[in-house]
Length: 86
Image 1 (spheres, rainbow, N blue to C red):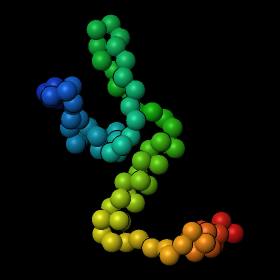
Image 2 (cartoon, one colour; image 1 turned 180 degrees about the vertical axis):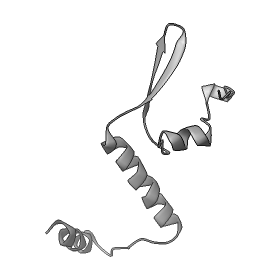
Image 3 (tube, rainbow, N blue to C red; image 1 turned 90 degrees about the horizontal axis):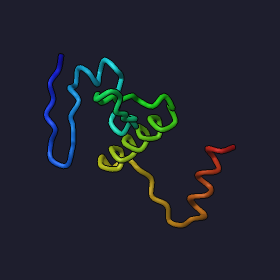
């Protein structure tokens, strides 16, 4: 059994082994319930939220590494975007 400490402002850190075994990712949404004096955390089953969170995290990492495209105008942006849609 793992023991964790309640941090300032109610923050908890789940142990890495537990996060890995449950495939929990940063930004993933968990639901919390109180049942019979117990706290139950459940990962939301929607992959849309976790996929979006993962994509946003990856995008921010790319920006930090300088991996991005700059556009001179909205017209230029729309032309580039249209390539992905068509």
